[in-house]
Length: 235
Image (cartoon, rainbow, N blue to C red; front, side, top):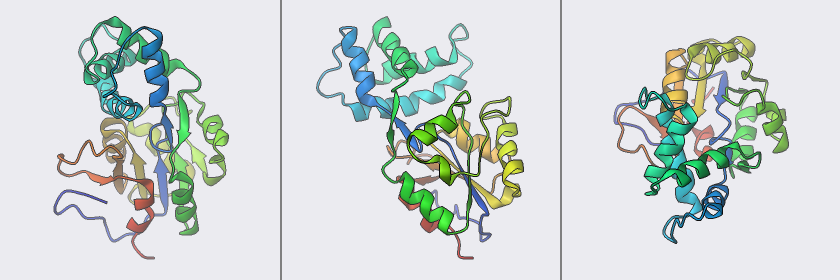
C-alpha cells in the first residue's frame, strides 16, 4: 500500500469491507474498445494497447462529474475524454467508446487477485459488501464470475448513485456496522474515495492499478487487491 506521508490507518480493526464492482473486481476489456475503433476504421496505432485503452477509461470516468460541457451526457463526457486521452480526434473514437461501454461483453475480465483477496478478508472475519452504479445488474455480474457467494449485501437498489452518501449508508445499514468500522475499496476518486469519505467510512482505499494517482497527496492506494488483506490491523 502506498499513501501520502503521515497518512496512517486507524488502529481500530474494521468489521466490514465494501467494494466497487466495475473496474475494481471485474474489469472492462481494452480489446473490446480497440475492436470498436477498428470497426470504424480508426487506426489507434501499434503504440496504443488494450492496457492503454482501459487506463484511459479509468481516468476518463472522472469526467462524468464535470459540469461542462453542459450539453453532453455523462457517458458522452467520458467517451470524449477517453478519445482525447488516447490521442484520437473526430466523432468516430467517441462513438467507438460509447459502443464499447454498451456491449454486454464489455466487463469480461475478472481481477486476477479478486478471489484470493475476498477469501482472505472473509477468513479474517470481515463482512463483505458491494456498492455499485450498475443499474441493478451487479448480482448477475458477480454470479457470472463466481463471486456472489462472498458478499453479504449489494446496494444497487438504493435509489441513488455514487458518490451520493446515501448509497454507501444503505450498505452500512444492511451490513449492520458503524461507519468508522467499515472500509471502502474502489477505483474512482469521486465516486469511491470521496463518496465513501462523505458517508463517514473509516477508510477509503483507492485501487490504483495503473498507478495514475501517485502524485496526489492524502490518498491511500493499493496497486493490486492482494495488497489489501495485509493492511487489516490485528484483532
